Length: 55
Image (cartoon, rainbow, N blue to C red; front, side):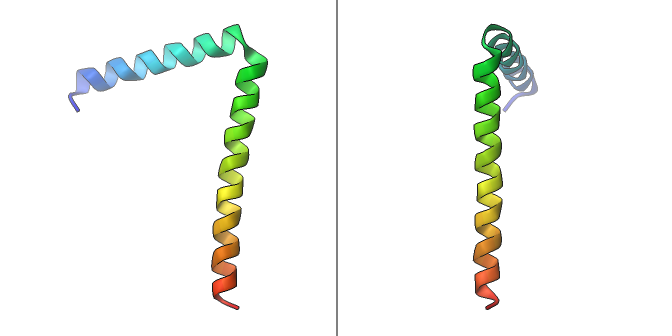
C-alpha cells in the first residue's frame, strides 16, 4: 500500500475515533471495554488450551 494512502487512512480513522468519543463517550467506553474483554478471554482460552496439553 502506498505511504500516502496509509497516512490518509490513518488520519481518517483517527478523526473518526475522536468524533465517536466526543459524540458518545459512554458508548465508546462500552465498546473499548467489550474489546478488552474479548482480548482477555482469548488469551485465557489459549492459556487453558496449552495447560491442558501438558496434563
